[in-house]
Amino acid sequence: MHTTTRIAAVAAVAGIAALGLAACSSSPAPAADTASAIATVAPSALRSAGTLSVCTTNLGSPPNISTDESGNLVGSEIDLAKAVAGRLGLTPDFVTVDFAALIPSLQAKQCDVIMASLYIKPERKEVVDFVPYLTSATGVAVKQGSDAGITGLDDSLCGKKVMVTVGTTAQDLADKQSTTCTSEGKKPLDISTNNQATVGFQQLVSGQLDAYLDAAELIGYYQKQGTAGIEMVGEPTDAIDIGAATLKDDTALHDAIQTAFDDIVSTGDYTKILSDWGQESLAYTGGK
Image (cartoon, rainbow, N blue to C red; front, side, top):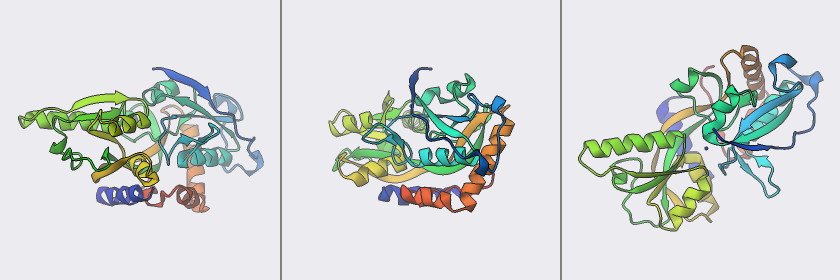
């Protein structure tokens, strides 16, 4: 998918709809039917035999990942992880960690795979392998009706108070824009960080911030709810793919997950999952 196409896709869905561990694991789903597995993984390759341990986050990042009223993890990535585990004849078990701790947690073998809105970046590809399954982009949120003059991820942010989730692409982009501002003789961005999107939205609405940067689909989701008091300005930028990450030496698991994902796509389950969460336009359509 070309970059411009991806950005347009994220813009469309936005209109529709973070080394410390949180030390929380969800209740495992019912055991999968191993007889229906289309690919298998040796028990020795897993953290726990019969279980696919998935590192995820609980950042309040719907429609990808969030919790329902009962505290259960829900979202398109949770459904995709369950579908992958099912194809492998495994029971999914979700372990929530801070976003910045995702890869360190995988490296410490506290999970088998990461499925947590992890953008596929060159520096990450040096330490993990990816199976791409979604696309995303970065958006700029302001308080609804704001007169701060912010028009998107551009010079209108110079000198403004902005917040980002630590360790995300939005943080990198905010730092880059701040450098651009100072190189042009303008004031840098006043950047603060948090570990949960809702914190950023709350401070935005209370007037403590001028803008909040995060995934465009997340901003679009909250904007659509109509209760957050925020809106996205400008066009989503820097479209990028999201993928399931495994350790470099975990070739067997990586290949099995790829096989599982391919089957999820071919059977139509992929389209159904994305449709359930209003994310059809974010489908990954690139090569392996």
